[in-house]
Image (cartoon, rainbow, N blue to C red; front, side, top):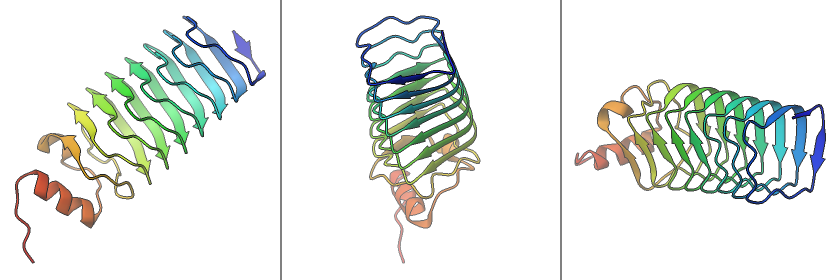
Length: 185
C-alpha cells in the first residue's frame, strides 16, 4: 500500500501486484510493463510519463486518477470500476476495456488505435482530439458520448450502439458510408 507518496523512476517489470492500493500519490517515470494489478484500488493518483504497457488492471477500482503522457499499449481493463478518470496525451493502442463501468472519463489527445471496448457502460465520457482509428465498440453504446473532435478512417460499431452518439458532420459522412449509404450532394 502506498499513501501520500511520490514514486519516481522505478521499475516493476512483469511484477504481480494483486490488491495493490495507491492513494493520494504521484507516480512519475516508472516502468510497470507486463505487470498485473488485479483488484487494485487506485484513488487520487497521478501517473506521469509511465510505461504501463500490457498491464492487467482486471477488477480494479480506478477513481480520481490521471494518466498523463503514459504508455498503456495492450493494457487490459476487465470488469473495472472507473470514475473521474483522465487519460491525457497517452497511448492506448490495442488496449482492451471489457465489461467496465466508465463514468466522468476524459480521453484527451490520446492515441487509441485498434482499442477494443466490449460490453462497457459509459456515462459522461468524452473523447477529445483522440485517434480512434480501427477502434471497436462491441455491445457498447455511444449514446450521449462525444467523439466529435476525434478522428478515424475506420471504426467498428453496430448501428444501434451508435444511436444518440455525438459526432461531427465529417464523421457523419464516414458513418453513413460504413452503413452502406451513398452520400450525394
